Structure formats: structure tokens, C-alpha cells
Image (cartoon, rainbow, N blue to C red; front, side):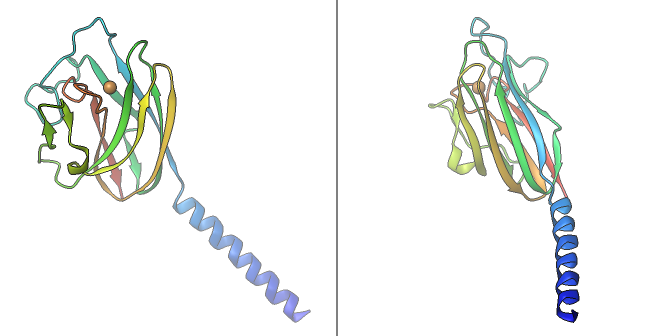
Length: 164
Ligand SMILES: [Cu+2]
């Protein structure tokens, strides 16, 4: 009888701990929209992160994250390409120093993915398609970027913040 009581107590404690842990590390779901004004619209340039011309109102394609912030822990990005005619992707980048420009290759019209704090991606989504990226994130500044040639400079990036 005593042993049974002890077992029940231990079981109760385990359930309490499990509940606490799962609520502390609850996953945040972020909806990410990849959009553009259509292939007939000339792509903008010079609108990459931190660039003088960067202005969301002028971008011809972009990334929208809702919410644009999450608590540290598991974050799940549900990404949808809403374009009618263009392939897009979402790359998650950690900014070690948000004031530093990202390493960019003019010849490829792309960011250099192994030099920009690359964490993971939902790669090349056809128009109308969706994908998910789930990662454990520490506090800090992040970017969500499309790195199809030319798209970053056309304004296809957004900030994402992870808080403590
Ligand atoms: Cu794109």
C-alpha cells in the first residue's frame, strides 16, 4: 500500500513537471506569406535589408510574418507562396550583428547563404504551394528572406524578433 502511494505521488509529480515543461516551451506558430505583384511587374532593385532604398511601400515582392515576433523556444513557420506565376522560398537567417550588411553576390544576384547566419529554409515553393519550417530559436534578431535570384534586392525580406 505504501509503495503504491509513493508510486502515485511520483506519477503526480511527473504529470505536473510535464505540464510545466510543455507550457514553458509551447511552440509559436508564425504564418508567412510570400507575395509579389505578378511577373509582368518589373522587379525592383536596391531594396535589400539595410539598404538606403529599402522601403516596403516600393517593394514589388515581399515577405509578411504574422506575428513578427515569438518567445524563445520552438517556432514553426507555416509558409505560403501566394504568387500566381513565380517560385519563392523562405530562408531563416540569424543576425549576429543587425547593423552589418548581409554578404551578397552581385554576379549571382543572391545572398551568399553560408555567410549570412543561415538556419534553415522552406525551399522553392511553386505558386500556391505551402511548406513548414520548425526550429528552436534563441533570443535575437532574425530575417525571413527569399533568395531566388534578384528577389532579396526587390524587397523580399522581413524582420523577425525572438524575445526571452
Ligand atoms: Cu522570391
